[in-house]
Image (cartoon, rainbow, N blue to C red; front, side, top):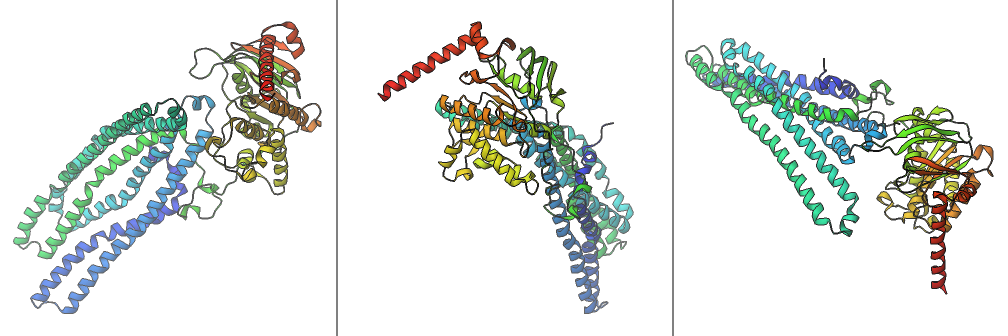
Length: 631
């Protein structure tokens, strides 16, 4: 049996249990005392009328007035406190949900991320959490402000006049049934609105990321038109939700208030017949009117909970397991407003691993990118000894990047195995992978931070005391190997220079080299035992490339101490560094077509030799042309 989503949110309710308990206590006090103003008003009226007839003293009238004021304060004081505790508690729940959604997405398999637009994830983490939070706020707040309030009012009315109350309350069950029956419409329209929001967010994220391309090719008007179309679709969907819920509100109010006619008619007759005093009738009428002013919120609360269920259904696949309330590092954390669960927790430290180069291999690997028609790798077997420098090349689309990603265990394989130290790569723990492997993707993403922040990432947060200096030393070495020292010295604030979103303030070569430095320093205080570099030199000149390769071999190659050495896998379409490799692999259409040393492949006069000679000819022509301009 499928559990209601409110039941599944129990871990998040426990994280803010203290605030919800305080808010609930205030809500119980408020809604228990809610009948006092109406009752005390009726008694004050009866006392004032008795004073007019000479049957009560002025002191009695004064006390009756003070009692009415006290009853009002007993209601409104707890109301303020209830709203404070409940609203801040729900805000904390929303923050906790967003944190866990982000943690869940970071733990997703790459295949899922490959097929899910970033804008859709943004819409779920931001917008759907907001809709869910509204549903939770309505549920908790209206439980006390409407449900308990209504119960208090109904009990008081039954005490006043049971027969009249039963007749006056007959429309209530129909109103509740109506709220449940319209849930299907609310859910479908809310789903359409959330999907339209996700589509617009995804488009905006894509268009803003590629804004320079849009302007360069004159596609700005086309981009604006597409945003207009999706914005209109979202507006129509939101309007549909608003019209439905706005249209249902007067229906609910009409249903819930139609009993007023019976109260005035029958109550007036009983008052005229002397069965009720004027004060009792006024008090009863006040109770019923206050009940009808809130009771229409009961079916509305059902609709809000139904909308929240739609948002939770979209959010649920993203959520990582919630942090248990008992794991909080601060005592009585559930009572603290604005406290996010686990916010004091530091990143897990990287494990200490043996400092040695790793043995890696591919065993009859077949791999297809999610959604692709043809495999990127087809029956690839490869053994890379520890400490060797292996270079992989091939035409565009031959499978170079696919080989690097398959070797790291980032994607599920169709067949075969990728092994690191004899163990499946996809079974390696994330922290161990970070400690033992340095990976530079083909298009390294840089964050809107400083140079140092991008190279070191979160190292400062996860370093144990006394390890900060070691991290700084490794970072310095990484910058030197990546040939960045001169560039950094020329920046306005050195390592503290802000590079902008995606490294927009840097050249393409600088971005690549910062990515390389990050891959070398990411495992600090460990040194990488395996370096996987996917086309790291496409944006640097030949001289810089030669400096980097020489520095890599000196820092991690055979000349380095055994504990400092690493196995290096270089995937590139540029072959200037390949003569220094211990072994060259040539891919074509996802298969290995040639392998051997540079000298062996040049003698074989195959695909590798043809590519190498063509590139050498181009470089020679460029050098001659440059020399001619200099002369």
